[in-house]
Length: 402
Image (cartoon, rainbow, N blue to C red; front, side):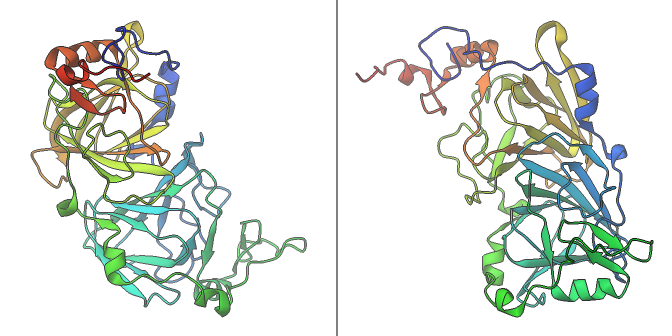
């Protein structure tokens, strides 16, 4: 039987398998030690209080305005993944995005503020929070923690459309010899760049347009922030749940993602262009062999996670510790395993935590390996025609409608 039909053969439909070669394994692994910061990614890089930011682009260039920004993996994923590294007291100035921007706090205390002047509202985020900032509002943030902090950032779509800086940010940058061209080039006259004649410089947004921007109250903004206390974990999210080695829990945060419990709902339904979820597990827990047709990135928040890849003679794996990521290509067989729960900071030290991001707004339909399908059926569970876990004894009594 397939993973979606409890009454047919044991062989899954051939959706096209992708073996991950050793070279691809290395190329798609982004360890914390592989991070390369850019200290002049944006126009506010000389503004006092903002001149010590580190911008990281792991997958896609994001909204960096520096042609020399290092990107770990340039392959299109349907989203961009990066990070902001900021010492205590450093500010990322007010700017506006056209596509989704999601922050995942991987350690630190940040004060987020929004509105054209930053006075519309504030929200303080702590370790483990996920915040979806609305499009078409100015936003900025300051590290108020005791230590350097890391905010992972996910941006919607491969082409984000760039960003618009707050009027005061552009005016301040000009006093330091920095300008932004209409084709998104950072012009540094102090370093010898010449203001081009053939391309206009970006000018501040006019007040009429600013007055038409969206407004969010603090309560509305809080509804877009999912703290560790807000997470709703599904204890049996998959066909492999209940099987040996299949005991991870899943908390859908943005979009339904790959959850197979029909009662589970994400906390944010609005389309982002990607789904975001937390996986957690104890040592030995995991997610058994499966594949799907989406680019997917997993990043360890705490513990050590082993990503098993391929099947048979080409089987391989990579281990991820805190802040390590791996990009799993569409169509690749993969399984996840918690090796230990010791490293990093977790909302519950009993568990290791893994952040899972996949392309698309609709559900990610999983294809389980034939061995998992057989074992699950013997355990008494199958997937119904809608792709949700159901009792095998019930599904087998169903008849097809003519």
